[in-house]
Every structure is written in C-alpha cells, then in structure tokens.
Image (cartoon, rainbow, N blue to C red; front, top):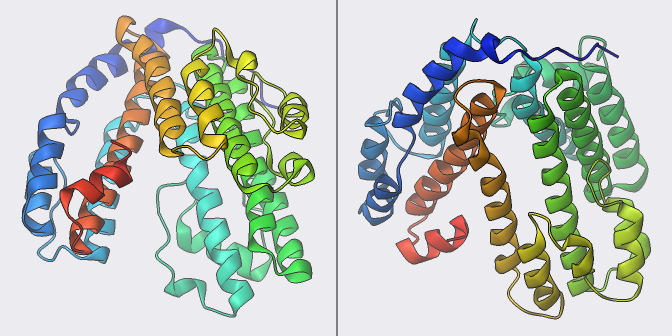
Length: 333
C-alpha cells in the first residue's frame, strides 16, 4: 500500500485561489432555470456557453456527450500541475472506469463490439484502452482492484448471465478503491466524504429492498463496506422489516433515514434520495469556510460532477420532448 501523504495546507495555496476563480463559472440556479424553460435543447445549450462549455453545431445525444467531455478536458487541463496529490482527483475519476467496465462486459456478454459503445473518457484510463484490455484479457496495465473485479464480474456473467450480480461486484470494488485512495491521501475530509457516500448508498439500498421484499440474504449481498454504519447492523434491522432510523440519529443522514422509514412502507422514494443528496451537499459546504487546503478542491470536483449530471439530464430530457416539470423530477427537485 502507498504511504499516506502528509497534507500541508500551503501545498494547496495557489490551487485554492484558482478554484475560487473557477467556481464563478459553475452553472447557477438561474442558468439552470433558463435551460429548463428553453424551447429547444439547442437554446438550452447556448446557456452553457456562458459557463465555458463548447457548444457543437448539432445538439443531439452525441453532441451532449462531446460538450460534457470538452468541459471535463478544460477542467482537467486547468488542474494539471496544480494538484499536489492526484489521489484526490482519482476518487472522482475512478467511478468512470468501473462504469465503463460494466458497459464493456455487458456488451461482451451480448456478443456486441465495445467499440460501438459510448464510453465516458473521464476516468483514469481512456475508454478505448480499458475496453481493449477487458476484451483481450490483458489487464496488467489496469489498476489491480479494477482488473480483479472485472475478471470476477466476467466469470459471474458467463456462469449466471446475471448482470446485476456483476454490477454488485464492480460497485463493491469501486467503493473499496475509493476508500483506499481517500485514506492513502491523508485527507480526513475526503475520507469522510467517501464514508458518507457509502452510508447514503446503503440507506437507499435498504429502503429499496424493504419496499420490494427482496429479503435479508439479497440485502447482505448488495450492501457496501466502508461506511460509518456496518452492513450487518442494517441487515439485522431489515430482518425485522424496518429502517433503523435510530442508527442515524445525530448524523448527516438523520433526515434521510426518517424519510426512508416512510418510503419503505410505500411512501415516496424520491424524498429520502433527495435528503441523501442534501446530506452530501451539507458535508461539502464545510469547505467554504476553509481558505486553502484540499477541502476546496474536493468540493469543487464534487460540484462539477453534479453539474455534469444536471446538464445531461436537462439536455437529454429536452431532446426527448419532456416538459420542464418532468425534467425537474428527474433532477430530484
């Protein structure tokens, strides 16, 4: 295992100033509203030009993909050479490697060419390189955790033809790697953010399993390690058919757990999911009080990731002919 970094706030002095300047170009609430009310995807995309997005001549599914990829490249170029510890950035890049691995393995199981997939070039490994490695089995150049999880997931797909089981293997490996990267970086803030992500994911999973009656054995197989609340305690509560709100008392997820109790009994599922999002946002807001250090970097990268999701949901919604209200629902607003 790599040694933990000794984080020095002064290492992030210039980077933090750069980030504060870049935060002014993040998509604002007013700009999101203008996009939602735009009559066409093309006109909505023009709002993004104000934030530095490269707007293609044709705004279709491929154009949306290229716009977001272009903005990612711009952000990556700005950060290049400024980040003292790339593991901070890798926590946000690694999930795309696992996303692409899922897509490639499922395509391979269907007998399709991975080259035809619209892979996301936002990870540590270019999508085409990852696809070639998984197709040929030559995975030595991949991160070891990813390579091992991909091999295991492929064996599951070949044996059971169950893509959900393969996804679970990759999800578990992904969060295990995120936890390791965060711990190795030496940033308590980043490690806390990853743990909160795990707890939020497990809470959402618990509520869905209780709603669908899938059972404790299924739940044990899909819960993630690495959070503050042990999976065994959640599985025990599920055996009694309930969301253990008391385990979340006094934590960032207290409100989400309270809403999860109602959702597990057939109430609105979106409510606890929105509350989980608010908990993560609240955690990141603490970075606003830090003048320089790794916290502004982490909060900025998380804000960019949320922005990319928002942009994709709005533009694909408009391309599909959805009205603003339906798109807002997809955004969880």
